[in-house]
Amino acid sequence: MKALKSRILDQIQQAGGWIGFDEFMQAALYTPGLGYYGGGGVPFSDPQAVGRGDFVTSPMLGPWMADAIWSWAQPLSVPSTGLGGQPGRLRIREFGGGRGDLAAELLRRTPAGAIDFEMLETSADLQQMQRERTHGLGAIRWARQLEPGFQGLVIANEVLDAMPVKCFEWMGPEGVREWGVALADAHRAADDGHEFLWAAQPAGHLLADAVAARAAAAAARGQAWDRGYRGEWSPWFGPWLQSLFESMDVGAVLLIDYGFARPELDHPGRCDGTICAHYQHRRIDAREELLRRIGLQDLTAHVDFTEVAQQARSVGFDVSGFVTQARFLINSGLLHRAQPVIERTTDPADRARLLHQLQMLVSESEMGEVFKVLLLTKGLETQSLAALTDPAFASGDRLASLFSDQ
Image (cartoon, rainbow, N blue to C red; front, side, top):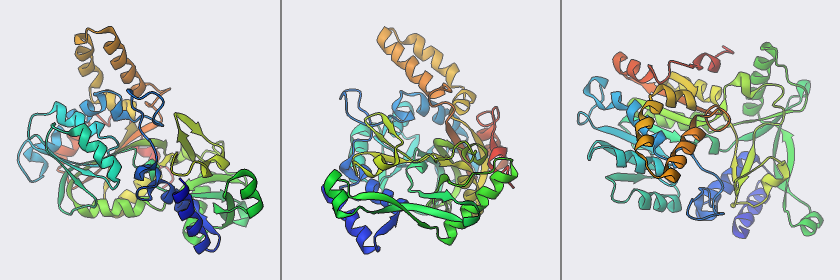
């Protein structure tokens, strides 16, 4: 933690005394060997190690997410998709696979040789965790950068929310301010041991233009912002989607994350943004606390799915489906397939655990509503695209909400 803090102190000094929160977030999460995801934090809860870990992800909650994805993705593994490769074999490329739970469960439940699995992971610590969890379950390759010519399914579960964001404040006629991180004076640092503080400066033109467009759209919906409205904007979505599109010849991208379309995200009642930290299963909203425990706590913001969809469309993807996680799982027939699994489970504790995990995934009060599933496609034949979207993205479709401002 001290080494990471020292690096960020040097970074701020070299930048003239201030950096954007996105730069702070990037360093705090991804500095190799020191950042939260680079080896400094303990992100994922381990049921066998009480008190360790900060959160759980959908693939950690039993076999259900893998079951739904594998069942849904079958149209991508048949020759009629126009995809190359061996018939009946599905290529999967997963970004940031956490502990490797989804990969392990997919490999565990599929016939030998049915999946050609590639994991994109830059963290050496997480890669080792993934290797241990998937050991002996099937062939899997690790990569640190995108290779061109991909044909198949790309999965990114809780990746977008961990992309660094800029923090803005809407000042009405006075324009837009960007909130970033500066150095506390020596007296304050000595008093409380905290070297960093929030500080604002006029936003650059990219951020200012993006925020002004959002404010105008909100006002046109009858949701005008008051002066002082705060939110986040990620400059990472566009470049990431561009690289994803260029590396793919044909296939589908499944993005699973918590967040909202603009009519909900930019509601005037959500006036303090969504940026927060997660530490030991506590959500921390106090802004001063976001600059503490550097490298030991997660930093995250709810995903602006309208921004993602617009950027995806601008680089060439077809935006083919958008539903809640609950709708995706239910539409994909998960509850029907889960029933015999639960009925065959004779141990009462195991049965209760499976039921609880399923409930967490689909309940509106848990992950079912706030988590969304966005489907992007490229070059798929009409029949294959229809098989992917119906029924999984038919009932409860929210695609129109992503482009309601256009």
